[in-house]
Image (tube, rainbow, N blue to C red; front, side, top):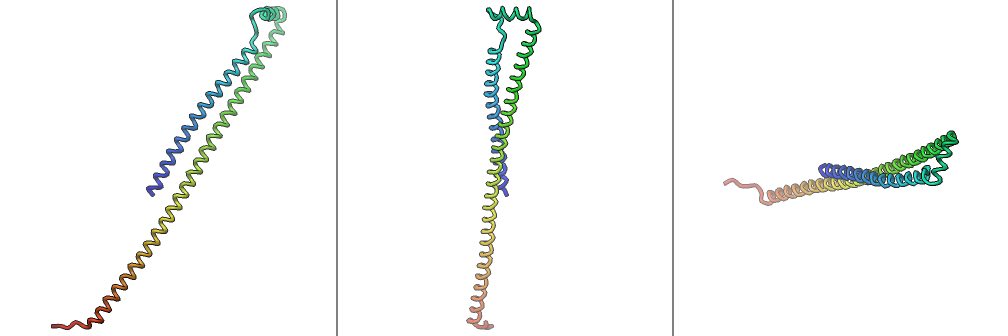
Length: 168
């Protein structure tokens, strides 16, 4: 019983440590994932920003002055594209979190199964040991009974050989 309690305590500690390690792993992986996504955002902004410098800037300014509705439509399209880009990144992040959490749960489920197998093996060894102990105890009782019977028989033979005791 004490051994089982110690085993369960050790397994609980191991599970808690594994869970903490997996949580830390998720945090680190998400940190790298977020850094990659930020790099993607930065690249997207660089590639899609409205150029206000040089000749391109002059043309942009003229378009805004002479065709404000067209400039507004293009700005709306850029915002919609940027929003769609952000939604895609967020969808990827959510999917990544789900995968990481599923991996964690799978790892913890594997650990729980290993612990259950260890408990089954321990319980099996305990049952074997208990059975062996009970068999040895039974054998000892039988041997004691045989020895007592032999002692009783020897005493009976001794009395028979010595005959009745005479009074003096």
